[in-house]
Amino acid sequence: MSIGVWFVVLPGVLSLDLSGPAETLKLAGDAFHLHFIGPDPQVSTSIGLNFSGIEPLPESFPPGSLLVLPGVCDSNRYFDTPQAEAVRRWLTRLQPQIHSQQLNLMCVCSGSLLAAKAGLMSGVQCTTHHDVLARLRAAAPTAQVKENRIFVEDRGIWTSAGITSGIDLSLHLINRYCGPKAALDVAREMVVWFRRSGDDPQLSPWLRYRNHIHPAVHRAQDLLSAAPESAWDVQEIADKVHVSSRHLSRLFQQHLGISVRDYLEQLRLAIAEQRLLQGQRMEQAAVAAGFSSPRQLHRARARNTLQN
Image (cartoon, rainbow, N blue to C red; front, side, top):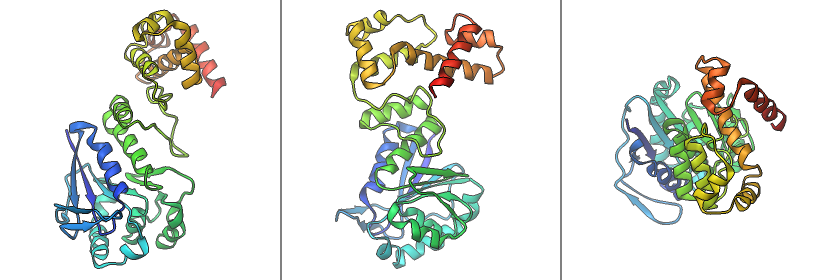
C-alpha cells in the first residue's frame, strides 16, 4: 500500500529541504506517492528556480499520510507572508489529525518553526536548525527543544536539524515503513549513509557498518545478510565477491572496523533475539540463527555486551 506524502511548498522554500527528502522517498519506488501543495500554484525557491504545478491545500488527508514542512531560506521574511499565515491557520485546523497520529508530520529545518506557530509543538520533543533554536523555544514555550540532534521523533511528529538531515530522516522513515533492505538500497543508490539521532536506538546490523562505498564489501555483506544462518567460510565469501580471503579480511577491518566473522555474528545475534521475542526457546532460536548450540549463542551475546 502506497503512503501519501504531502510537501507544503511556500515562497522561498529551501530547495534541498524539499528535493532532498522527495528524491529519497521517490527512490523507494511505489512505497510513497508524492504530492506538492501550497497556497500558490507556483513559487520561487531559495536558488531562484521556480516550482510550479503546486496543488491547493486539502482540508483532510487519508489516514497514515505524511505531511512534510520544508524550511525556507529566510524564516523571518518568508514565514511572515500572507501565504505563510494561510498555511499556519490551515495547520491549526489539522491539529486534531496530527495529535491523534492519523496524520504524521515531518518538519525539515525551520519547518518546525512554522509548525510551532500553528500550535503543533506544545509538549513535543523536537529540534530544528541551530540558527532558529531560540525562536522555536519562543514560539512553543512548552516544547522540549533538543540541541545537537540530527532528528527527533515524538508521537508521530518528526523534526530534523536542516538541509541534509532531511535526507537522513527520510532514510529512517523508509526503514520504518518499508524495512531495512529498502532503506539500504536507497542509501546505496544515493551514496549516503545512515546517521542516528542522539537518542535513537542502535541501528540493526542490517544497516550498521554500511557507511562505506566499497563494492566488494557491500557484495559480501549482501551475501551474509541474505543467509546469515548458513555455514559461511571466509574463503567461500571471498570467492563469491572475487577477492582473496586475506584481502576481504583487510577490507572488512579497513571499512567496517570488525572482522568478517564478527559481522556475521552480529547478524546471527539479531535473528536469535528476534526469534526469542517471538516466543521460541533458546535452543530453537540459536539453531535458527546459525549458532551450533545455546551455549554458543550465550557466548556471542556476552561478547556483544562487552563490545557495546
